[in-house]
Length: 144
Image 1 (cartoon, rainbow, N blue to C red):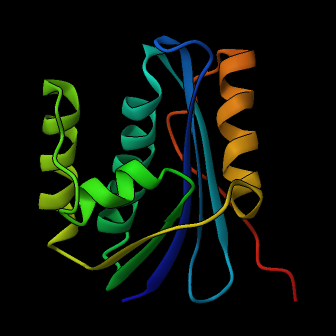
Image 2 (tube, rainbow, N blue to C red):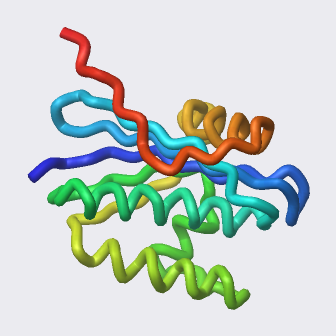
């Protein structure tokens, strides 16, 4: 079982508008997996949650022991930790699903400044600009 670290970001150009997600996951052996995916027309908070959902599903698919998530979305962190409630049906549903999946792992989520989340942000923005669909994570080989 592995310990995973994920950086997640959602991007919406307009609110709502064309949206994408970026996810960067590093495993305990140093392998990095990335995902950039167009998710259609969404608002920014939905995009943030879809990125988190992808990270959780990836971790569960890898049978990870833990997932430590970093995001520049303070509202998502506060909603996931129960400080804030979700006021819209789409966010409530995504929050509920993410919290349910997170219970299967040793899970943490923390806020980081945008500049510390630049790779996930770049992937999310690239997905919007290219409107590409990447249906799987791309894993880079370990450099020795």
